[in-house]
Image 1 (tube, one colour):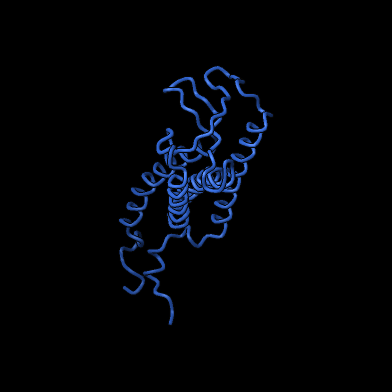
Image 2 (spheres, rainbow, N blue to C red):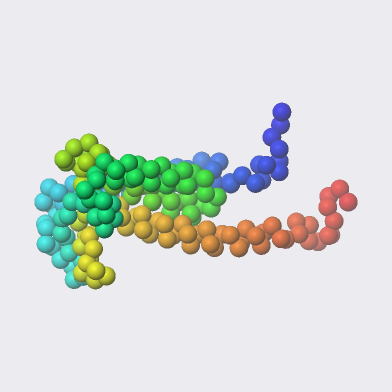
Length: 188
């Protein structure tokens, strides 16, 4: 039984592209590694607590809750939610049809894995660990975050922008006549 050519055209090209999958794996691994290395350096005191660069200060905070310390009294629940969010990010990353959106979602996946690793493996124990937030911003309410949070936030924004740009371009491509010179099909 041969594959249906119409169905093959409707499938996203990115899902079958080996080069894009390798690039996605690289982005995910790079974000995860950078996040875990910087958190380990800060937790070990190699990057000193209180170091400041104007509006950015290193301030170590263990966040046992979700973003903004929501649900901080329920670390197991937060870990389960983080696991679900990671699974959704992975699913979206492999199903999205645009290269730029796929790479942005790979950054989201790397960030989600970085924070999930903290929740699973950092003290006080399995599934109850605190995320090491260390970048403190002196503007916008003075929140603390880490590289994983930055990758998640910018990755989501980038993926949305890429999908918004790709949507109209894809529609314009479908509206074009594939045989503009003759106006007829090969059979005609």
